[in-house]
Length: 467
Image (cartoon, rainbow, N blue to C red; front, top):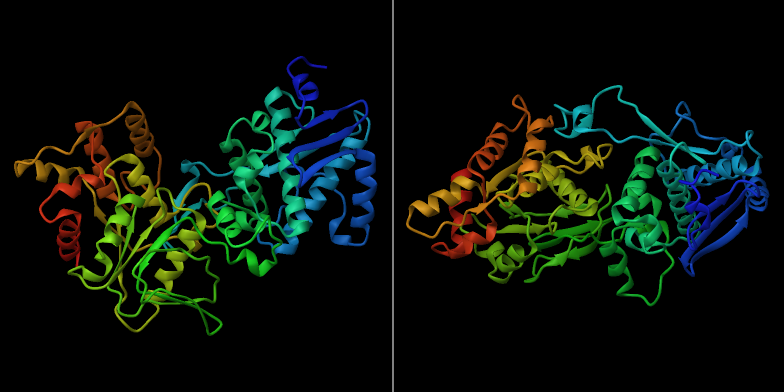
């Protein structure tokens, strides 16, 4: 046995595969997910189950294997089951006959993406198709580790689908944090699986931690879910303002008379969102700023008229982005003048990145971006030049120095296309990043609190200028 691979077999609590006995151990730190099964037994069990369905024939994946592009919930389960079955079949064979491997689609890099001129979404270039194959025992210790991580997560997803349970990404990580290493390692594999199958993460019954715990506030224990229940999971984002969510003629959420914020609901394609009378929709990066504006009832007292305040609490989750996309689609399909969408983010590389996620989408979900973006999103601020103007008026400078990490991030953004490219769709955004880098400064939204009239007066003036 190669010494670099040995720890994979010996460390207690880890997934381990012993080639001589070809045994698969899926030992999870949760009562809901615990099994140690000889691969031959698991193979017989899964083979008999698959035999009744010709569409679930056992087959190992390869880079040339046909991978589904769009599947329904039932097909997700088929994919997971037949992938596990194929792996178990290969693991049950003696070397060199057994060659277990799993192939995932590789997500695109910025260089592989373009802006779709029709939809405005960040998409991969036409014909892009790349795969990563992980095999056992692998050529390196990393490949062996990645292979077993994929198996463990597939097993958790399989059980969640079978039992109709939601499970959070954090729950999966805490099954064995020492083995997974980081939460990001778990998130990456989950996103890779969703991208490979061509679905969103919730189709795997995997949700963000906020969604899972919100669901458990109203029920004791880990509740059973039906497909319709999955659609009711709430986002981490918050919204305040006059709107009404209607599904099949039933009012699911009426916030027209509410004075406080509410969690953004999960929407379906056929839902209606009534925003009649709304003149503007302001997307705010920071939750603290959002709560201040809600507390001061800015959405009802703004000089620009009634509006809606939204925050994704930093980088937005899928539910928040989908809700805003549907809100944009519905608002622009009506006969009345549609409300304008604005973004208020920090004047730093993270704020600019958050704004681009709302308007163009993200690399992590490039296959879903067309259904998640707000193409006509206007940049309200905050810009470095806004802060410099405040300084000229005799106020204390709100400008902060960039950190080394900020400078590296800006440099990477400017080098990577297509949003920030010199010939890209946002020359003003590129110029702002260059200005930050040249002057070595950034600015936070909270600096607007100290101006005349506070942040509310500043937003009023900016909205009128952009009308």
